Length: 497
Image 1: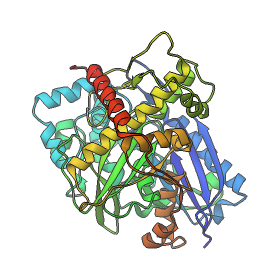
Image 2: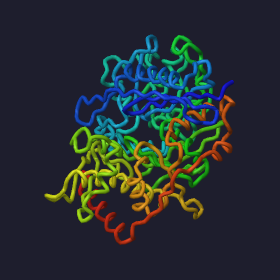
Image 3: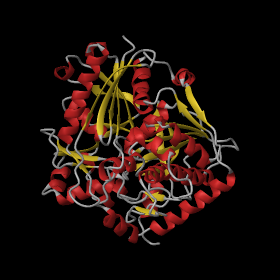
Image 4: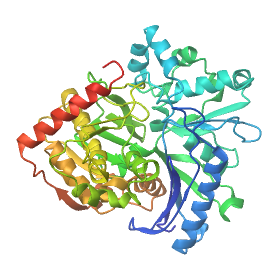
């Protein structure tokens, strides 16, 4: 077998496919954006057919660019935007509705209703999650209630539910495999992370028939084989993990106390807590980091809904920048005497606030405020939100007195200005790796080591390499003043504030 592994990275705004060689180097990639659908304020959808077509196109483009045939690929690893829900017909594979995206807030009132029934403690105890529209369960319940005949058809076994990984595997295998992995299952509000099984009590509350749910496997497992007609060869699918868990794996954060933070559309920080399932007292999430060989490793997670999406807003909404890459240089030119804060609650606020009704606001503007100050405020917002998450994590769990190792990845970390400001606001070093494609790399490693063509966990961890370590340079008085201003801005933005 060759050492070539194909990673499918199905994200929120685009699908990518990356071919890695036996030395874990990128040798070819393909990427295709797809349409963001906004039917109402706070609603976000994707067309599952467009996602599927973008994945197939990206895989073919990556194989062509790498100059390898599908028959040269030892295995496929899949990573995906988490919590996004698809329901499709078992007979035809056709979706009954657009996918409801993780950012979608349409079930906020339903979550509030469940909270009023004092059910949040039940969900949190079993799933490690909070009752928020972010997660899959209430989205699925909405689909079953709002698509005519859906709940009855689901009960009869005519419909399949899945997060994007499940939908892709179903399509890739020609409907032969209806499966998911433990990380994606752990984000649905229906999966008991202590028992590692779908939870009957939660399914009853959400009125979800068990017949429509996928089988849950380890992150490295036999998920099925692709139809030969797709890529001219059958390729085994041997690795699956939700995007944030895949990035944790790609960053080789295998030891308790190691933390990764991914800066893409949103920002997601995971702190490895080992086999210790830490119950957060600071409104963080307890989640499955990965499950390998039947052993579950847990993590504390903080989710920020808007990170890179704020930069997209500057580019596409306000049109004050031409490309995302301009933002760091522009921020560096901002007037240091202006304290402009952007609280990017465009779709509510995530951890540790969990306020779906909050909406974005800008504070501290003067007549002199311009594009440079907006750019700096957008980038600093990411840094402040990360600080909020790190503070909450340290309150919940101490890694035997060790300093947290923070490894960063995602599109935003290419900006030196942003990473330096992150280190300054955190008052902690920030490690940027040489390979920034950590999400795809994590999925590829799961598949590659399962196929026996890539190194084991220990060998993979040794291969992780640092590009730059950003050390904090900001003086304590400036940092404290800036953080105080941020906390005041958030307080003013919260819906109850």
